[in-house]
Image (cartoon, rainbow, N blue to C red; front, side, top):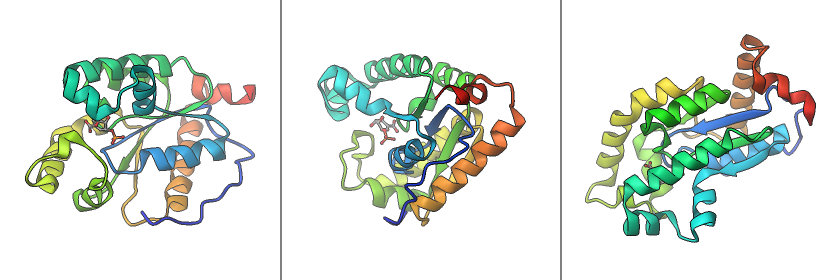
Length: 199
Ligand code: S3P
């Protein structure tokens, strides 16, 4: 995804008051979530950042000190709390969908948008950042394996998918907003749609 012009204009008619972003590491959840929150005038919450803030540790430190199961417990707790927010874009961690409980919680609250990209793109986007789960001899192969393992989980939780490969962030955000508009039209009585008048 190229660094590109991103429309700062807010949407005069935001379709939803709550939305979650899911997808593998490096698919653009934080960047797209941030831009989306500006356009829809919602609060941006990144679950990984909340965990880091609360624990005063980085995600790699938590994984190293306490292991993945403890990290996943923190993640579920933050997902649970994010459901109580009325006006928010929730960017989740790449592995949030692995727990059935998290998939059900997110999908039960409102629209869940999956961002997707090819393994090679994901590798390029993540190689400069510390991602303990990818610290192996062949990270691209590991990404492929994890993508395969998680594919059905992403599909199960997602209301719809937007591809983020080789695209400007502004185009990806525009597709997400279009998808949310369609979703809202199909779910006119949903809490996440009715809530938009309360800004
Ligand atoms: C993980 C993805 C990371 C972070 C942790 C585990 C995963 O989040 O939650 O390192 O299991 O895929 P991002 O998708 O924001 O990188």
